[in-house]
Length: 164
Image (cartoon, rainbow, N blue to C red; front, side, top):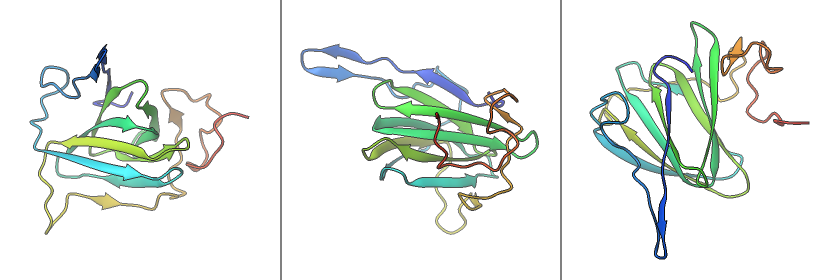
């Protein structure tokens, strides 16, 4: 993983009424002093990428319904982390904001994403830099630590079929 990117499996505690799961605890990951919680719904096949935060924002992501492919990319090392998040297997992912990041809703249902941030959103001067979702300059040399991945060295294609 890129430095600071973390994943944490979440536990569903089920009984006859349903289940309960803790989403974020201060003692799980780096102390990010969470300031805000956000919720988004994304339709199947939609890509929300690329952006980064240059003033210290960190994001913590959890998918509560559906599935997403979440990616973080480091311009300096040209390494990309690709993480699949689903509502079936809950996990929390921490992405330091200085990495370019984004996601694609995968599967056939809307993705319900909850994300926590350690900085309040500034409506006047947002901490957000953007580049196009299909930016051809995002060319990972490593994907999840491997240079053997067939997608390495090519422009990142959110629409690529994962397996043939």
